[in-house]
Length: 395
Image (cartoon, rainbow, N blue to C red; front, side, top):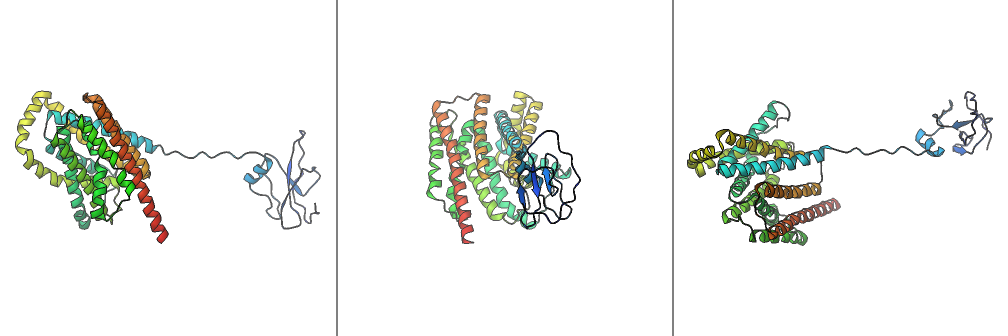
């Protein structure tokens, strides 16, 4: 070692009685710093590195960080455990639970009081009232809307009304399990209509992913005891309405991204009520009185109010929790998997609760259709990633 020009000003330290392997940090004359081998305590210009923090020379900073010293001494660094966002699994479980409860309550209400137009209007009103409570209590920020946003929301709310009411009519005419299998065919409408309305041309593998959906729905319908053409057609109309709602949301609301999903759903529910309420009066208003009297005679007035009240609450809760899952930043694939498994949970729970007769063909067809929706999700996400990469390459 070269002799030091300026020895470090350090206090004399008494060496430990136990013989240990020590590492010293020296300040050589050259600009480069070296890690010296084990020396005796007689070397005044070296600093022994033990478990205690390393001291630094007064003349200039020559000692590396504690992490580097610990690494040089052979002691491993403590691993840093990544934080887990527990909100995501909690929100997903609530989303599943609220959806299952809603479908059971909704079907029970329709069995007792078969007025799907009125029940649909009430559920939209309940969602609007729920959002007003959140806004007044400041649990949810009040959205800033203007005339332009309201006009842009009109077609979106209209198609939401079509999708919601027709689904409710379908549930009143068929088993919940089969209606949800038919509603699994929604991606077929999405791919077919995105081309002429959005100018999106999907590749062949996206179209191929639709084949299991169509085949599964057909197999399930072949042995469905509760099958009714009216219920099947309304489920398909619901798919069409929801797809058009999503398409016009992209076209009309692209400039209003400052409104989050929860507020957007609340505003859609309020505007949809403006469409649904007068239509409900026209379509079935004359039958409400007699249907209500029959329902009260069957289960009692208190029970009917409970079914309507809880149905409206859980309708809003399952929709709100789905947006809460999205707001946590989960990927599109994760949300698609969650949505697929949610449909499985709803189908199985409704069969168990209402004890609908289900054949082997029903189960096989249902499984194929639901698996097809998952394959479609993967294919569409792959196509979206390819589009994004192509745009980035051009830029």
